[in-house]
Image 1: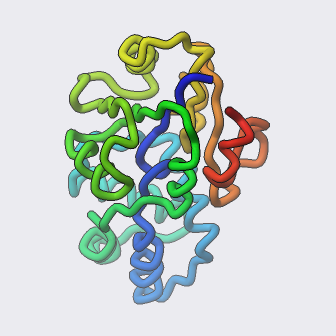
Image 2: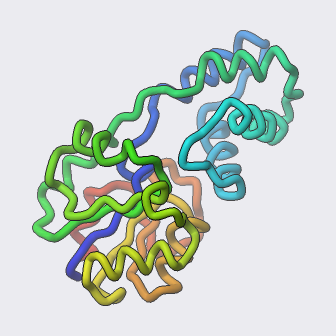
Length: 211
């Protein structure tokens, strides 16, 4: 293996305050939803609704409508407005297990559906010069799950697909297209959402066993 290629959102970085905020709003509207169930519904919905590089109020309104419906909750105007006002644009943080990346003596890069702020964000949250390349959909004008986007990474990193270990949190956007192009693949599933993929890890601590 010559290089580790990572997704960014919900693989390297996340918004940990989101779940508390959603539950606070739901509780204020007399709905009690289990945290793990909320995460599961949110995750599975994210597999079928693609997040744009730059989100908007209309996008979050549509997404939250579907999330509430998946929980059996009527998406009223008041509830949707409270969710947007209290839950949207929470701060990004690096996952705690990103510390293990510094122990791996191997090239690292990022391929992500994200806007042009990602490079600065990664530098601030994880560190400068940790990743050889940060390839961003907004900049390249193509995005996952397009195989063209993955081919850009292969060409820019100057590697054969078989020399790449790709790590991401989505079957649809990460695992399937990377595998289709011949990359080695790992699904990062810290919350135990997915039961079936054999090539799965729950922490970056496990990466050393795969390189």
